[in-house]
Image (cartoon, rainbow, N blue to C red; front, side, top):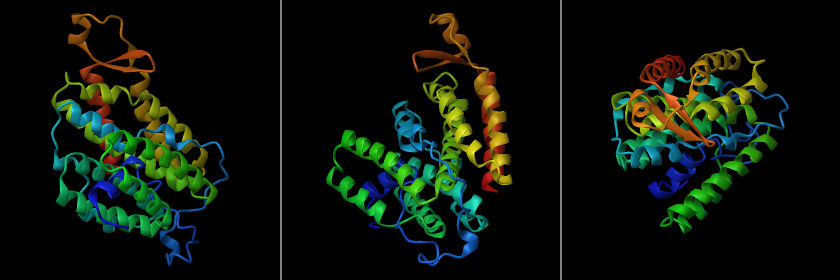
Length: 292
């Protein structure tokens, strides 16, 4: 895989690296230790991963809002050796791919390279890197100067990768990567929103209500695994806060002073400062639990 920032980052960031894989080899052929391979999932045909926004999409909006890069929000790269189980590897591949996206969006090249190394190591350990990512890379290279084209390619890649990993019995791995990526993205945007609660970043937090529901639905397919069941329980607890968000009663100045607003699915939601702090606290607790 060529380490060109413009190409690798989009392969990883746009499709959350849940899709940057699939050499078509078995775990034995890929030379993986059996303890590092994700457990065989249940037979699930209806899990739709591409309803979850990629980190790059989220951080594009974040940067447009004027938010600045904050390295302290990233999961330290030296934690990699702690991730020994397949569950931990999968979730933290998602975490590190979100961090990689954050570094790319803000052109933090050295940090990008450090996180890229971790992402590559985890994808190799899970046996999900290979020719699929190389094919996407070629398309991205050919359209490197056109952001609209890159986003279209990334969207298509996400759908195709979801289908590919299903066919190769890796759906649970895909879901865990997506959850890890989403949690890290929430950690970053909620932390930045808490610093400037009246900013547009708060909209990004409230707009996670629907992706939150989708993640819970996807995890429900794998709750026979105790670690997944525990993760699902934590997400459901976080979801209670999102469920408490109410449609805005007014678009006037008074309402704007009381709450931050989010527009999604033709509904404007109110997110109070207290709700934002509660979401941030729960996300921090869950993230710390997963990233060790």
